[in-house]
Image (cartoon, rainbow, N blue to C red; front, side, top):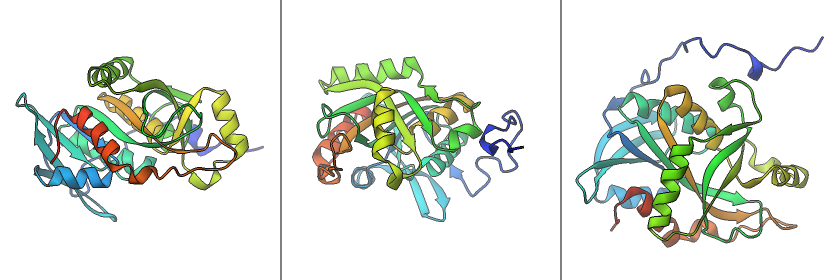
Length: 252
């Protein structure tokens, strides 16, 4: 008899032995927090922000920076780390520190040719090809994003005249195992992009009862016969502009 996969075990109601915030999490953050996956943008934020809290891991210290918007409200900014497990840990600790409304801004590979470099994709669902989300939600193939968050984020982009698409992403743990067969199957299921965190972040936010939405910057392409990097990590002005729209703050 084959043992069931551990990811299908039904113990979602049991508390974890390690509580979020137990690992040297100190400080406090505003209710609004942007999870920014672009390190050069986080560095620009640091030039004019105050440090409100510091998260710690074996990757080192990760400061939570706070900016004041023109209307006087504050918004936190932090790099959540790459990959579903690290991003989930970051979100968990930010909730403990007072975060209640989260928006993630990061990059993704594209699976369809019409997504040109820099096009914005608001995530309305994620295909769960990672492990973290299964520790927060019952097993399932996809997870739906909060429709109110999707609508609000799309409205924000529309108001700023940012071209965008709303759609599904494929969240996977294995960058080097995005095979042609898998990309074809994901495209057939309606996935526009591929990245490493969305499904987990949606799951953690739902489990903890906080608001979450995500916009992806169309980066490298897996839509053709061969992978095309498209030099997306050097498109710094476009990356920064997208984050500024979400933040509601112009950076120096």
